[in-house]
Image (cartoon, rainbow, N blue to C red; front, top):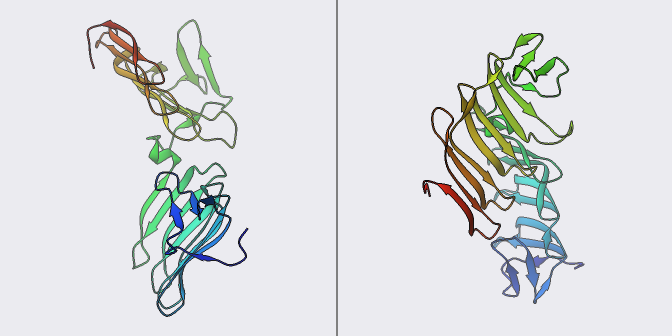
Amino acid sequence: MSDDPIERSDPEVTIDPATGRLSYRGEPYSGAVTQTRPDGTWREYWSYHEGDRDGDWTGWHPDGTMRYNGEFYRNRPVGTWQEWYPDGSRRLEDVYDIEGTLLTHSRWNEAGELVEFEDERTRKGIAADAVAADDPEFRWDDGEGRMYYRAEPFTGQQFLRPAPSSPITDLSTYTDGYPDGPTRGWYLDGTPRYTGDYADRHAVGRWCEWFPTGIRKEETVFAPDGALLARTEWDETGAVTARYGQNRD
């Protein structure tokens, strides 16, 4: 690890724009990187470990007040990242989990008013009154094909977390106990896994699935009455492996 910071402007510093990894003199770099103003004060201080962004990242306004502060872990933002206006009032706060998934995003204007707020539910289109699938008062009736909540047919959204501290991975919507409305799925990193809609107790419209890489895996089209119209399947390279029914590409 370098004992002394290196300057971002050093011609031997190379940062990969796709990954954010930094090399110095052709090797992955461990240590601090600074950006210095003409008067010698630091504008930015960044930390790296074996080329990855790792550790404290801080920036300052010209008068020395803090502009932003946060931490990376193995090239992922973690914990609380904050930004401030030149007068010291807060501008932004983003909170990440250890995997780098954004949990909450808040932004304030210069008057101190909260003008943006987003959490996992708002990003994923999940209603504030959605109910966790592990609520013991849910009961699925196999014979009726119907969901009950507190002994009544359920109307609303139900979401699933694979573990108490994990991100939401599935969303289902019901009306009078029957699937009705959007159904969605996500991988743990938040990328889409599947999406579709129900109406009148059957799948309708376009249903899509994706590989973890974001490449399409399957696309199925249903008629308003639930009849299958078309299906296309892809492999992980993006090549079509099967096609049924009318071509809907």
